[in-house]
Length: 253
Image (cartoon, rainbow, N blue to C red; front, side):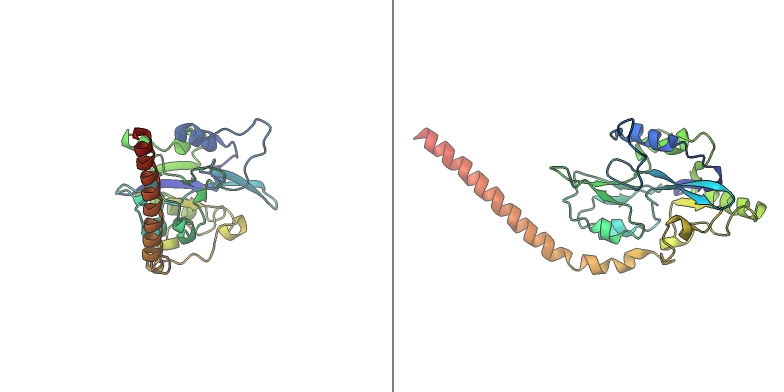
């Protein structure tokens, strides 16, 4: 059964313990002590805690991270299987397979994957649901670090049931919408909120069907890209090896 997260914005206090846990678990660089909190996902932050002022209620804290789609468009768009969906839910990334086409960034309806533009060997950066911790029987670092239970880990079925029970029990607190239940055909990360998600910057126009059916627009261009890239890289390989061989010949003579 697919596992995931339920994030309840009414329980989040903005402590950012989830971000700290994520940094430690994924060996991400820590920002300077005087740096302001990040305002969006980036290569050094797999999740971010943001806030909005709600009239009469004060600040509301909420999170952005990979949604771990049940049928992920980024997976279907990747021509080299650098991004894959595990049977237990996480959408994971293999940097050794990636050749930097960034099709995953184009395909993602939630605009999650980030690219390490400043690196000499750039890679894609995103939440991987701490799958190595799952293999050890542990929950994701963000859920383990949360002091209020705002982030809860479990099977998608159980989390979805919990979300609807909370909404039914407190209709005056929550909007009647579990974000991720239907968006993009369903996601592993589910969210409930006291205000409409569109007011918090979440996309309200995500189709309620799996998006890989649309990735043919990207994939139809893959063969030419791959063939051209292979020929180009093969040419460089031949030139380098030819020069090395010539150098050895010159040394021997």
